[in-house]
Image (cartoon, rainbow, N blue to C red; front, side):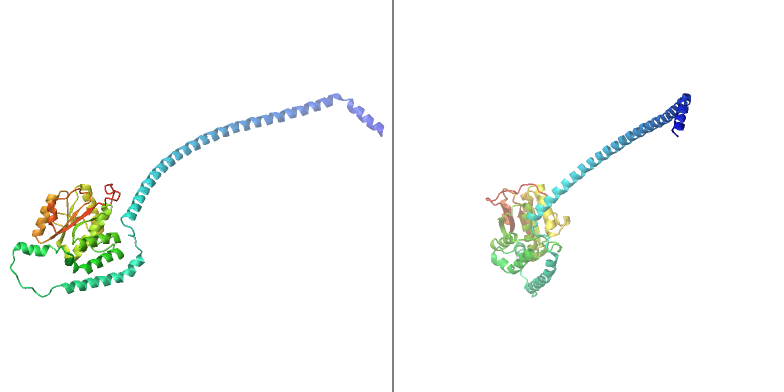
Length: 342
């Protein structure tokens, strides 16, 4: 057996050309495979370059869109920030006004509903009192001089006893203004929150000063307007449209605040302001006095209101029986002249 194997090996080794040919054939096949792989790699590289170019273009486009969008967002953000700042300032101003001017103005609805019964009862009592005070018995006709007749009609007595007959009604009105404010009441009725400090000044003006004199300022024009509006509302409840209001403030801006304040506090409008209307505004005391004289002659009751900022007043105005001025507190810090919107 071993001899046969040796013989086979010798036979194979005796044919070297056949072995060389087979090796050359294998190498050619390998070269062919390598060429194919090279072509595939070249194609893949070309494809990768194309993909890279497309990706770069896409990235550039995305970057441009992002930058444009970011610019738009930044612009919009600045606009919104500015709008928020404006709204915040308005909110702060309204909060300040609510605290300093109309403190407690937003009353609970339930409280107002529960207080309606007392309000209605007070109104009926006022009506009964008014009817009882009506003099239904005709008085004998007396011949008097026209001037004396006008004086009897126009001028209320300037003593505490004169308002003593009306004291109960005035105190009821002040208490109603303070405890049961009616924010939607009829015109010429006080519509704003009224506190004890306001009521004290009005009560003192009626009973201690007999409707003629100056009261201590509340510190701001708007607070003073609230006191004056309550006074006007009470006088009109007592004497009706016979009361005519003449306001002196030597500045258009100050007169504008008085007009807006009265509109807000008394529920009136521009039609109630004018030479022949319920309220007349003056920058000069001379025409105010002329208007007051004419109203007195016509049987009306002029109420003179003097703004706190007036440094001096005309002596002629002291002739009128109804005079309401506002005196500064020398010990208080003066914030009266700061410009404020109503």
